[in-house]
Amino acid sequence: MSEIPLVVDCVNRSAQKGNYGGTLGSPRVPPLLQNEMMMFKFSAQLSIVPSILKYQKSKILLGEMREEDSNWFAKWEEELPSPKELMHLSQTLITPNLAIAFDIQNPNTPNPKISPLVHTLSSAELESNSAELGGMAGSSGVGDEPARTQKRPRLVWTPQLHKRFVDAVAQLGIKNAVPKTIMQLMSVDGLTRENVASHLQKYRLYLKRMQGFSNSCSVYGAGVDPATYHLFASSPVPAHFLHPGRGNSDHYMPFVPVVAVIGHAPQIQQQYRHFGSPPNGVPFLPRQSQQPVQRMGTSVHSSSSVLESATAANGRKVLTLFPNGDD
DNA sequence: AGAGTAATAT
DNA sequence: AATATTACTC
Image (cartoon, rainbow, N blue to C red; front, top):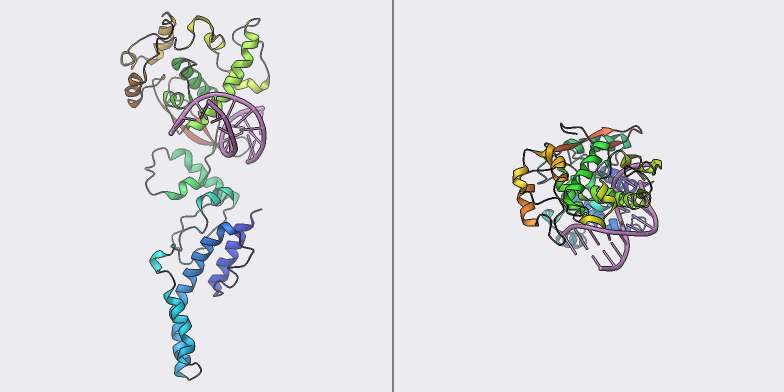
């Protein structure tokens, strides 16, 4: 699989045995790693400088070496970066991007001095590490550098989660529904804009296909069956999604001061059905009025939810929405 | 910066 | 099969 961790690991073992950097410059080392390798080399060399100097001194004293013959080393030593300029040994040798590329993770090892600089994790270790990701909803994110190097478990769009999605899109109106605002309105902790964007893309394709059937078939999708759309079929598609041209279907939500609606979330859907659509061109809820509401944590739902990690049928860790009250 | 889309990867 | 990621355009 990945040759790079192997190379690094070999170098590391070699260094521990005292073979400092002998082959570090070898062409086998991929170019991208060279900088990190050099840092390692300097670290290793610095750490043995005192021993070498001591050794040379003794040789000079014994008359086995002339003083000027040892000068090269002192000069060489001066050109070395100071310890402060060096990367700490406990830090990973490879960049975060490379770590992602090769599925390597930085183990936060307690004893940096003797621990391997780079440790290739077994798949089991990777699993258990990513498992914690779902639960870590409120981490401060201040100094946790390796958090970015682990890949987040893939999201499972449960019918409940999809329903939130559909409700959010319905609230915004199809024209205004964009990943970011949908995400905010869904108020599901751990849900990313990318998650929503990806889902939205597929959902739009689904709607497009549905429109082809909606004239002759039931609005609720009796005519569109493919197993592909299994999930989308689980939540009824609001009729106006299918006829974006007619009756000013976007931003059909009446002008109801959103604040008035806080705390009555479950009734919203019933309510807005009875309002007529605003005339053409009247903007649905200017952004200014939306913002405060979202900051207060208001959503279509009476409660927000948290994505938690679970184990899927195939044994993989995934993020799922566990029902939280009003679904 | 973020949205939309198609293609592609996992 | 479902979801993520990427590359590109707007």
